[in-house]
Length: 154
Image (tube, rainbow, N blue to C red; front, side):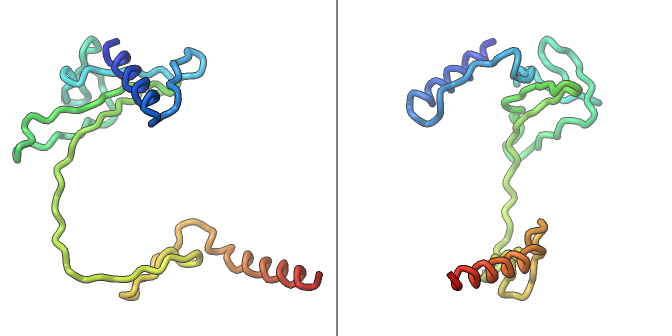
């Protein structure tokens, strides 16, 4: 209950500052059942998790392990929400993951983005387009030429 009031207060503050639209209240008809779980009582257990007032809940996948050491000993899961889609229950949690620095090589490249090929880099590597719009690029170009030719005749 407390978290619901906090969420409503934050939504109204964003609305009054002009950062968001008017907050809508949940309707029992059109909203999926979802609720907040106290993050301080949420703990990872073998085969599931333990939550306040719910007890042990078995899950199909284990919760991610929070990193220990390097100042991360007091990490907790944040903003845990449980939702129901009509068949399955889902637990959504957020947590911080330590940033691992990647060594820079000092090399710079140019990237050409296109329709037929997704990207062509100056080092010669070519990345194919994952959607099928590249296949239709020639058909589109031909249709455009025919349309322009017909337009010139007018």
